[in-house]
Amino acid sequence: MTLALWFLGASLYSSVSSAAVTSPLEAAALLRLGELILDGRLLEYDPSQALVYFSKAADLGDRTARLRIAEMSLRGIGSEPDVDEALREIKVLADDGSLSALVSLGDIYSFGYAGFIDREAALEAYEKASDAGSIAASLRLAEIHRYGWFGRKNTRKAYRYLAHAKSLGNSYALYLMGTGLVEGEFRQIGRPRSGLEMFRKAEDLGVADATVALAMRRNNRSAQLLPRTKLLNKLSGMADNGNTEAALRLFDYYLDPKNWGSRQPSARNIQRARAQLEKVSEKVDPGELEYRQLLLEILSSKKSGYGSLYSRIEEVPPRSRPSLMRRILRSNPNAFFYFVQMRLAEQGYFNGRVDGFLKRRTISAILEYCSSLRVRSLCRNGPLSVQTTRLLVHAF
Image (cartoon, rainbow, N blue to C red; front, side, top):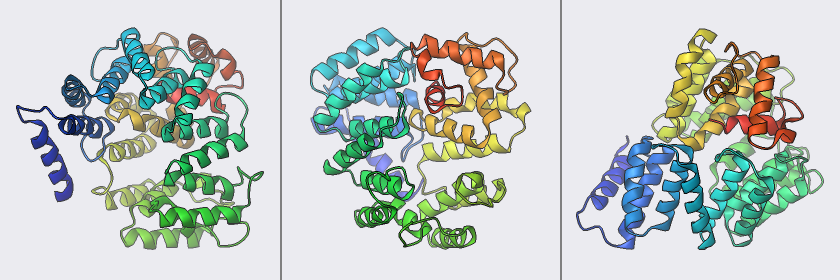
């Protein structure tokens, strides 16, 4: 841990260890410390320790701490699951006006965390929170419509919700709008050149990803990616000068070169990806570092090693697991479905040989899992559809 991070952790620990913790400010410090630990931001992921601090903050009357405890209980994180009681608590907090609880309800209904999915209830919760000024809800709605999670895509709605998040003060939404424009997703709304201008505005507001995105694209009407060699040289120069985001983009490239739109992609290079991650390991949050290191191990492992790596997914902060599973799916579908088979076997849906192959028995188990969530219709386009894989990545 760097000196700055150590100081932050030490100051928080000292402020919350006093025997006379009584003020709302101290309750907020307890809550923040718990969230840092639960999300693996600045501090190591440790759900049981996060629960301790949430409990202390809740005892002091902090409603968000009560929400975090209920969310953990509902998913069995750091404690035995109690879905019914946790869901009741979250609903009470939402009825009391907590926008965070409304977003949490939307997540529960959207991702199946309580054992079922209710698309209408999810949209209702998100929209109510968005209308009341929740940036998180606006971003969730943008994703739902942008990728067609609940059915058809609606890029106009997606763009509108991103614009709403931007109007609420979220600079990253501006970067996301620009990304959709330069990649052609929002072609009905604007041109790629407009996306470059949004990147510039986002950069001015401190969005580091926007700086990298501008460096990767040509400054012309089509805003296409630079040729591979020039792009890699540019990112390498930025990474060597201390740009963490550029180093992580290089990490992504060396793991998934075929997904960068090049007509002649290079082969995956685990060694170079690992080198880029090592460059910035002290600057990356512990939770993100854990998930990227595990991703490296999975992609460099033989199938015989998948079983031992499966248990390590639980060591990744919950907020990072969907990203981890999406990356595995994109980079090594057999590894992804190996883990899916193991998870569905634990839940009683799959009883075949765990081999990572997408055969009839695995497909049947996935459909049964979709049925258990009450959304078999969402999986009708097959196990590799956007809707089905979204359900599977959130099963972990």
